[in-house]
Image (cartoon, rainbow, N blue to C red; front, top):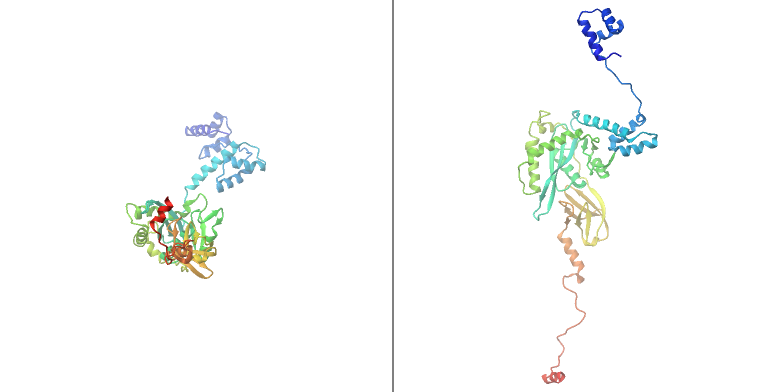
Length: 402
């Protein structure tokens, strides 16, 4: 096969005015070869002959397992050896390097696609910082963010927990604020949503069925598929939080609602060139349904409390030892025995708190004291004051002392 240098020489001889026959005679190549190279627009490319690799029968398996789980070369070698692979781990490592390069390259590619009205919302958490409460204890603050993909309308709520009941309560607050429920909601691979590959949390599935939407998580290693909420979180940082001070979580959430309504959803969006509030009217969301009862069974402990999602809630002491149903919705926790609500509390602000009704504590105190009062039990001896006590002369005590 002629080289690139041969190609350049032939064209140089042609530019010098030599005929096809003269060029063939001078170079020793056939006239057909010379004619072919002079007609070519680019130099000939050399391709090394393809050599079969011992890894070829296993490349599809390696690619699938690596992209799904990021397994190491050692793990993958152990998987393909029983399949007949007799090569070294270096072959596997070289192949994995090509997959990493390809994944890094394609990971930067983003295909922008727009969804129709009411079709999709994207949800994510943002860790907003660690602060101290009035007692000096550290409190982690998180921001729940929901963005409607068509209108780019934003809802934000700050919490002191990312537990599943809090997540679901934030959803219902978002549905109320945005005016309805989208058909699909896309999540990050957060542990409150996804328990494992292809396995979503059953309580989330029940919640989704109750409100009529389909939950899904973005494809592994492709967080850009939920880029709308990612960009909203970046916008939230600079526009809502930076440089401001808030007295407490309630004040922060009050400002966040005002910011959503009068700033985030009232501005002209850079991509849609429309105000989210204007497009929100075209979303045609499904009507929000009644609050979802997040119900689990618990046993009332000896202290007349039930434990629920990291916190404790009091119940009347008459129910100690009984199995009750505990549910949470919209920031309230209810305890039921059958169809009867026996206790109701505001949801604990963070894990580890005990929320008690003073009336329940008073009943516990009364029952824990014999006689139902706070007086101590009577002594097991008597001292009477109605008997006649004999009076002895002092000489009698003198005689005893002698």
